[in-house]
Image 1 (spheres, one colour):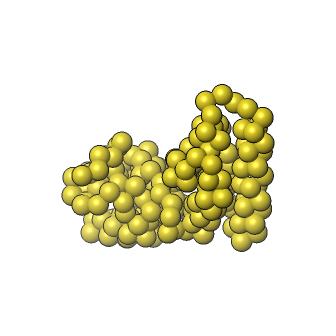
Image 2 (tube, helix red, strand yellow):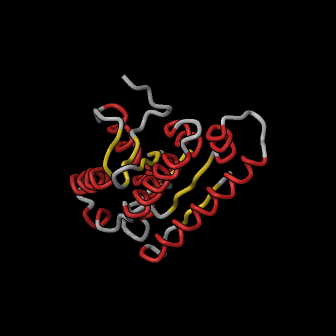
Image 3 (spheres, one colour):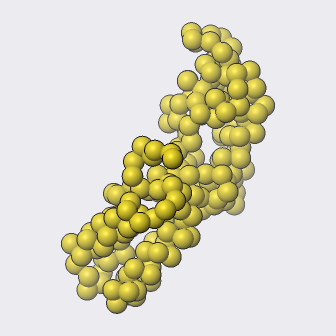
Length: 187
């Protein structure tokens, strides 16, 4: 059995990307849908806790497809007679966070081409899977892992620049089709 760092399942976005399903995101999604309707904020928050409880206690998987998650939320709202709220659900997905350090670990020390292939796959999967925010983190650790060094070297600085340029190039390529996408390196 796999122990998740939090009790909610991950949300699959595209074929290769995952986002954390967080309580705050669920609550915000339902509260925003209820805004401007006859449903009070407290009720939307209560429904959010119900969806969260279902995902924690009854959902069998560790990953749920984004379409399945939204369908379950809409079904819950419909069963409560809140079709007008279900119709207003904004299906904006939570941010996708890509660990460059984890991709470097998967690629293996010195296998930069494998790393760039994995990174491109993750970025494009998130972008074309519907994510609006993609954040890459762990740049320094990922670079040191690929270079197989504990100290920051000139080779590390060069590879850091290559990764940053690669992410910028993919961002430019992807934002032509998805201008609302924000893609950034956080560290």
